[in-house]
Image (tube, rainbow, N blue to C red; front, side):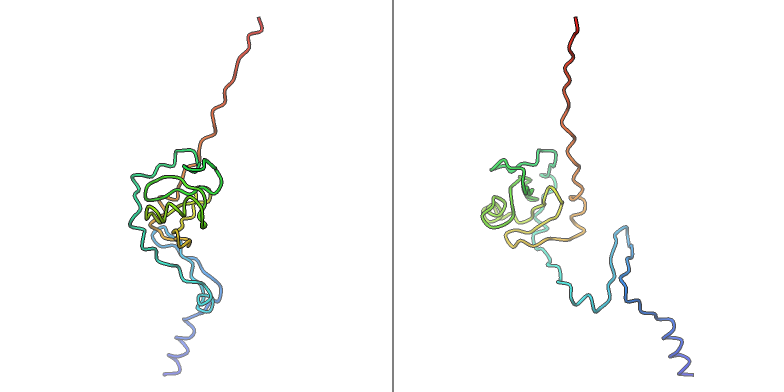
Length: 149
């Protein structure tokens, strides 16, 4: 009888070595085998998520650094809403993080969120509502009409 139980338990539990995706509460999660999980670097929990001030965020402005006026590698500070260039050392966003103690920035082109000056990506469902940045509308076209008379 014990052998019957062991056989029924082993037949009901099947191990699938491939990754599976499940969906709970409209959030997708990826289930991976234990062997692969040990190879993935654990995500850092960002202690600064509570400093985000959503009421100051306005993504309707042109995506330019507020200091250099460059449109390359522009990040928005999620604490004060200002735009800064870069995230590496000696960049405007990096200095803003150090001087103002504002640590959470979003890349305005790819919507990835980073913690500066530590320079790690923050992945948290808490940020999903911020990541839906509407694209800027195209500039208006002006047409001139010429009178043939």
